[in-house]
Length: 131
Image (tube, rainbow, N blue to C red; front, side, top):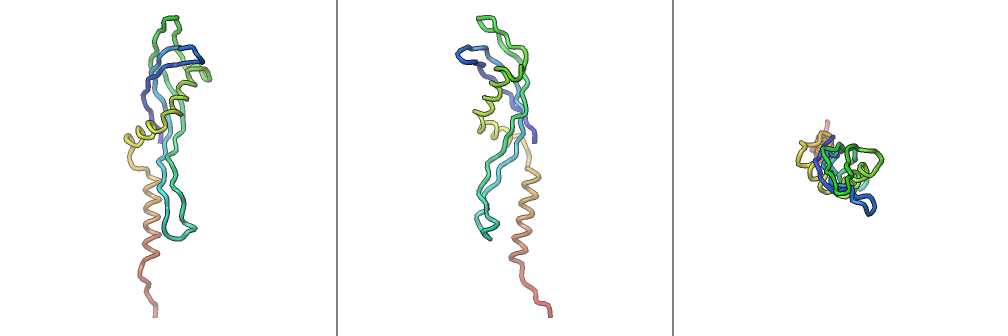
């Protein structure tokens, strides 16, 4: 599922402060999966963390700096793109929290849980003898 989060941060290239920027980061999010630790050992697996992937960023506004540098375009793969990407990489928990708070149940996860419940029910269903 695709999400957007509004961010504001300083743009720095090496030792040069290029300005402050506000923008919207777009990313995809897939919730993690809890561990399966019971039942047949071949069906057990460790927990998986949420998956997030940076899609892109859009600048909303930037600010003039004392040295006159003005950032007015997202110059991929220049320092502005790198700054958005670095912000995204450094704020994994915040990005995941934002996605979890702003999305409904994951349909794939719900389907997988239903399938697991059906499998467990069939394993423990009473055995009926046929005579």
